[in-house]
Image 1: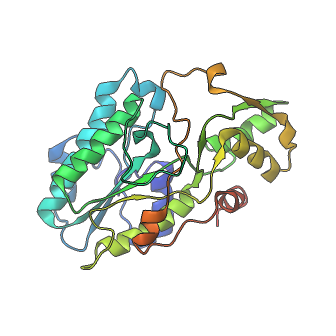
Image 2: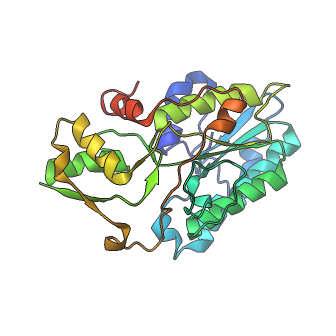
Length: 284
């Protein structure tokens, strides 16, 4: 597993136990094909690489395109070329940002892409590099990933901190997606890893979507966080994206359909509201 220090990588390491070997960027630099070969040279059929490494600073990517492209586009391509040579399986993590955000229904893997940000464009280029390098690789798009701990830097953790520090907090109502608890996503990826390494895998070579079920706005999610910590949800005030301009545009609607995940005979992730409760109160 690459990206071991991130929130998804941390959950995979904890939940996978001895099944998972996590590699830091110092041990495996995915932007360097020599490093990829040296770190993964002994892989073979039955082994699975889960690529969680990514440049996820969405706003910074607008002015740092070369670094974002190296990590999000070129690196995954090197991994794919290596797994294709060795016969190992690759699971590559991608994002809802590959879509333009203009849909009004849950997005299927085959729907037209059209990223509006540098981050989204480099992640889409990464998908394409993976597909070119190893057609049997599985691409998993996810969205709105959080750990939810009181001190975490993700949205849920930030709302928990702001609830303690401020009387009110303003959150946008015009961006809709599916919050995804990193623990649930890790469990789903471990199940997928067991499947793609088999001879009759339904998921190998597919693009799948994996998020917690259901959808909400960031405003709805913030209110739910306040409820979970015993605070008054009316302290969360509605606002719009226009009132909070950012360097990179965010998709207005990026709900991902889980239909292909279920067709691949994988366990659906539970409803986002139940997952949030679990994340805030212990993580199971």
